[in-house]
Amino acid sequence: MLTQKDFESWDLWDEFCAKKRRTPEEWVLVAEQLVEEHDGTLPNVSWLRDKGYRGLSYTMRNHPDLFKHIKQDRKIKTPEEWVLVAEQLVKEHDGTLPNPNWLRKEYRGLGHAMKRYPDLFKHIKQDKKIKKTPEEWVIVAEQLAKEHDGTLPSASWLQKNKYSGLDRVIRKQPDLFRHIKRDWFKKC
Picture 1 (cartoon, helix red, strand yellow):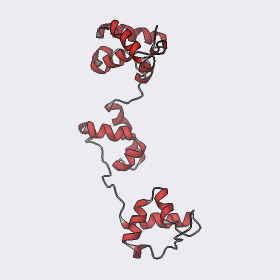
Picture 2 (cartoon, one colour):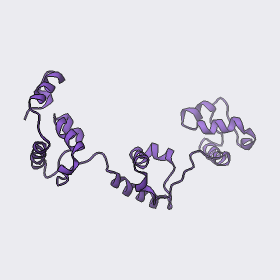
Picture 3 (cartoon, one colour):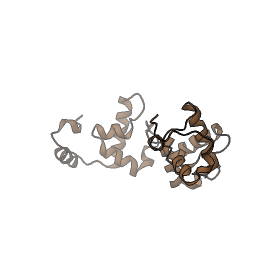
Picture 4 (spheres, helix red, strand yellow):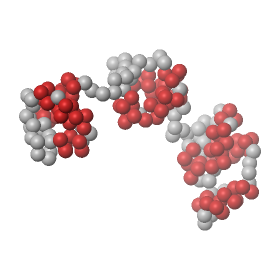
């Protein structure tokens, strides 16, 4: 079968594809053929696009009911699959899903699914607190000082190492941190 890589440009490929417009039902037949060629599973959408099956991926997105009978390799989870991930994370984090900032860093897709499908996640308790309190930053500062031979690293180090929140709190409430030795210039 011809793929985009067999053509000199995307324009030529698009022209070729335009001549071979398929109906959704014809794309189902193509998908079933690919399943046979790939050990019973339809390759993921990225693979389909890379191999010249853009029309198939488009049709799958717009007519998902036609493809329900086909086992698919998904890089992207369904909303229901993200609910299962969230429930597992709740178990791992003492009954509460971590805050949105943590999710954005560690499970970006989950955060997106929670915004897009809030009703599916109503039963899940989430820590809504995004920012640390000054007292929580004191604990972080003490731990950092302990890790750096009893001295809290410089402001530039804190900024470079994603502790800008700590640096801000130190500037606003220096009295909370007076007990921690600090090297203002040392680059750790």
